[in-house]
Image (cartoon, rainbow, N blue to C red):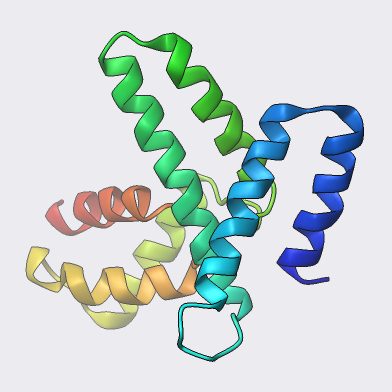
Length: 149
């Protein structure tokens, strides 16, 4: 089942349950999918593109929530985090830091990376391999830690 079909199905459930947070989140996904598919490229969205789109939406919500918390506006941060939780349901299961670390170490060994100068090469390979399963910020932090030690 495509992401759009899953979103539509969940929207029906949210409407029946009168779950406004879920409905708002699902509408955001639907809107982003529609915008992306009509952006003029003329190509069908791949599953990878859909995952990137959903990750972007989650990241936007979490970044907004972090800013609101920083400014002492917990009342505005909570809905953002609730929406992020709903949107995350459409992402593949996220890997733990230990699992990400294993992939990073294997990649460093395989490429022979030896310092921070090789970070871009390692990040590119690991990011492709873990697409949708790990946050770029987490991958970056682990790669930095491993290459600088």
